[in-house]
Length: 116
Picture 1 (cartoon, rainbow, N blue to C red):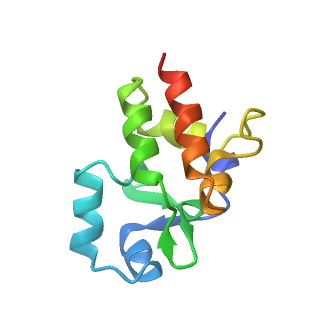
Picture 2 (spheres, helix red, strand yellow):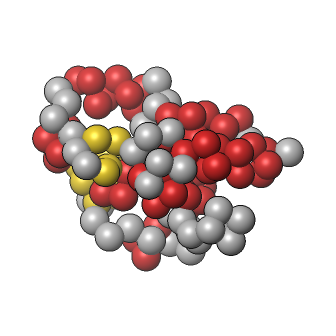
């Protein structure tokens, strides 16, 4: 499934920085460190982040840890986003929504199961 069908709104990096009240260089650092995920969209390509990764003016709790587990399992950025934004009966619901609701440990455990 294409990501656009799973995302309600895409934020450019400057828009994300403003939304989470974080300097743009810090947002870029989070990307470099793998603590945030973005995909290139449009022409010319612009790095964009799903608005679903933001809750209450912050990145959702547990995002960095979940991304680490998914990458260790061999997921690329698009696959990781697809997993985070797709309903999973074991959670239940979308992992991204569970993390926004404070159930990040359950999401991380589920991601670890996928890794093995």
